[in-house]
Image (tube, one colour):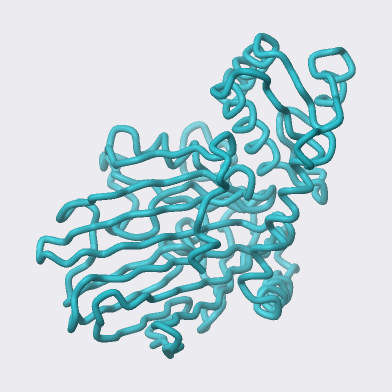
Length: 376
């Protein structure tokens, strides 16, 4: 698993953020968001954060704002003026770790290393951190999260960690947090949950499967509640625990639709493949997108990352299989820009197919235009 948790070696493909600041956290979560045109998720920390709920009159200033969305899942909230809005679904990547009964929280102890990375080449969000608790226990972990571009109903989370003490009572709890905000539950079972929106009647089903290896030994989880898994063990210093979670989501647009079979089938596909093949197919899908749509900037590394950042978010919000989902710059519009001379296609010398090369001044204009449109 450790190899899968490493970013692309070329720094032009990776954006990094180190440390934590409550004033900038919301912006980092937004900029490092990941998606596939059907599902989208803010890059909030899945581990080492406290609970989140709806604050009275919105007065609470949250240190983190985890959100997962499903394309087309709209309802009209109780606001003025009443306008449709996307409804958040459960935060399927939530993980709680307790050491001797004390939760691992970023606001307690010392976070010695805290790095989040958006690997645009692979379409994944990576995290690396080392955390020393007030009790003097050092936790070191690596995480990967993705929403599959190869199977848009699917998502994957990998977590690899160790602690530096013997004899610590460890508990890892994985859940679908914040489930059902603004929705009525219609089904809750061990591995599946279904909800309906109050206004539009649209529905969503989420299902998941999780596993944990301690060294080379699989541990059986406790199942205290639907869509929740918990593992307990006594630590051995330096022993590695590897956690993986597969999820699937389906949407229903009418009261007569039952999305459960679609979600169950998507999860079954992922489980049959295994997490390694799910990751490989996702990376292959992103490779195909970049081979068709990468833009190479000559002589300006900052603009190179900026343009790839824009293309990454365009790709992660578009779904060719759903004509109701579109990003503000379509493929046809991009081709027209190319044909007008903004970008000149040349054979690629890096083995990634054909790419667009543009001059830094033209690229700067496009980046500024993208930034203005993204603020709308």
